[in-house]
Length: 628
Image (cartoon, rainbow, N blue to C red):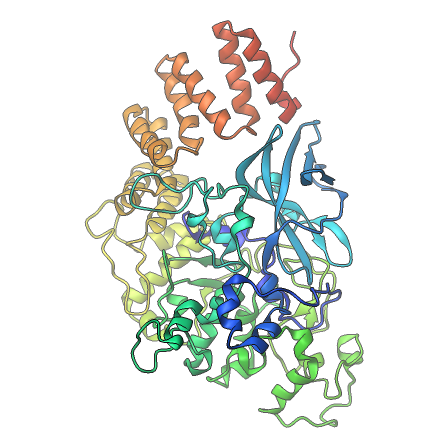
């Protein structure tokens, strides 16, 4: 679904490191390095702002991503799937081996780290083909909980977990690094113009984490190098333009938007931006986020802003921003609880006799400060999407619910409840118009798809002009809202919903709309090709798969479709060529190896057939019947 996330809600399971140092009261904490060298990207900042840079280097955000280092070996078994995960340290680095119940094995070299290690660390693996490291990256199904050791990653707790197959994409990394994935030397970017995102989306190169940099000053302030050039006189700029954002000078909503890039997640987050976010427009109109209509007792670990918006403090204080309480260059531990209590005192009269309850009676823990404001009114409890930790629920209340440590893990806050678009009020005028209401329906439709709420999604998509009609791709969004009709991801999502409902002509037209807008809309091309294959329209299958092959020569999906085309055309030689390409591009597909072995055996090439069969058996013994 392009950058519509889908992937963000379900796939962004590594906990955002930008949040980790901003949450008071974790149950366990990891110690960051005492002193760290100034990263190259911050050298120009340190020349004038040495004290600020030094302080920030103690912040968890400055350790948001890195190489896979400091991994402790261990074994973890998924009690539901019975898959056994073994982490070992080899001469070439850390290795993850997955042993499936039927004895099949897959291996990944751990090449990357996501997270500062304050609460936990997520690991990233590159698939191994024998001893060769492939260029595709995946979230490891195990992570390291600080103070606890190896544990199953949150996504591995879901029914039908993808095990080793949860792809790590550029969209998953946007809160951890500002390095663009299409600039990676190993990224599978299209080899024909215009430039686009990699496909397969996780084909970023095994050396990707050698290039990624953790978050720096520029993550919040913008282009620090341009600022240095303007200040030094190397570059001329209009009066008052210092080349970066002075966050304190921004309107409150724009200030919150800077934090919302990583601290507002919701149940679904949809990226409609293909480049830089337009600073003059509200972020919610460019990256809409869907949140539960009802205020639930449980909260998401990376949901600070959506929870804060429920608070009376926020509703009654239009000028309130994250920096009302937080010092952005310091983590919570460095800032101290007294500092947060002092922030409460700027708006509230804080006295020792406003209640007869103690912090321990309210929270179960002793007070961490004399005033106890944060202890009692900012609940520290277990998020529903990150087991074994406690963090701060930013829903500030006069009377909080008792903390919980045994919250049932789940992927979505409210899988079946009503969702609404997060808005701090700036979108309200645009949303009040008929065009704004339709835009909101389109966002809901896109968000309901990854939640598999297809009937609801179809009703919302039905409010737009029919797929393939002249009006289908005409922008109609009011000011402040990014057009849906001109985004290929919108039409691809619409086509998928129509396809599940059996409206195949409409689905085909929707995929064609996506391709007309973006020739590299690879999901749309492959989906249209599958529809054409089901209809027996082999020429369309060949055209669409060839377009993908030409643009993305590292992708095996078009070759998998061509295997079936060749079979229907009675061309085993072409099916064999397609399977050769598929297994070369993605060598961990046991079914493709087995198909290849059958064709080779029919051709009389018993030696190669046996090797292909053994590859299939090594990956999935249950798939391969014993030879007779």
